[in-house]
Amino acid sequence: MKKRDFLKLGLATAATLIIPRKLKALEYYPSKSEKKWAIIYGTWCGSSRDAAVWISEGMNGIANVFDSRETPDLSGYDYIVAGGSIRSGQTPPQFQEYINRNQKLLSEKCRGLFAVCGNMMQPVGPKQKTDLIDNHLAKLCGISDVPSRVFLGRITLGLLDPDSRKMMESMKMQDYDNLKRAECLALGKEIYESTLAKK
Image 1 (tube, rainbow, N blue to C red):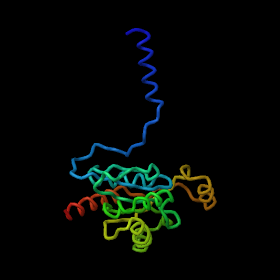
Image 2: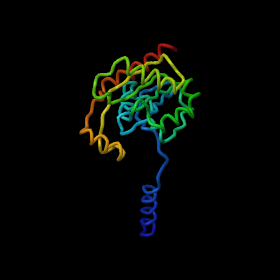
Image 3: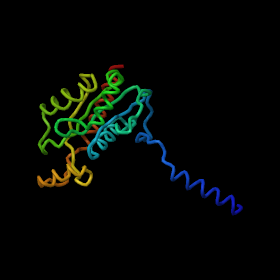
Image 4: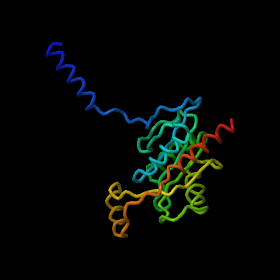
């Protein structure tokens, strides 16, 4: 190879590493599915991202996972699962804005809901499901009567915005992790099987 050709190839390779590409979903090597599935989530510090990935795994990996901050176009998907992390009884504002802009699509295609909350590290009960799913997420998405679950979450102080981190540290809060992969897998399986049963 000539020196000039070698340099051109090297520069072209370097350029492909430097030029940012459009963000894509977390994609896997899914099982075969006749229908396209997506999971859209909103998160404060990452716990809903992990819940979404595990829910997809419970569906045999057939769902692509999207962060609502990337404003993905989900119109090409047949079924959608939506959920997010909760702070003061609400999902993140960017998530709510995304859902509001896409409510018609979600009201037609949403097959499951999930919420992730700290719940003062207490077990989740019917009140949390009513408050966070029925009275918040289901209303946002314009749906009802789909498989849903509230999961306990986690806090990683280093991932919080400065004001939230300062508040948590003033309360002597430390990092904790109560998000259970098995619970997320079970919801994914339930959503998938209940959708198949309705065909």
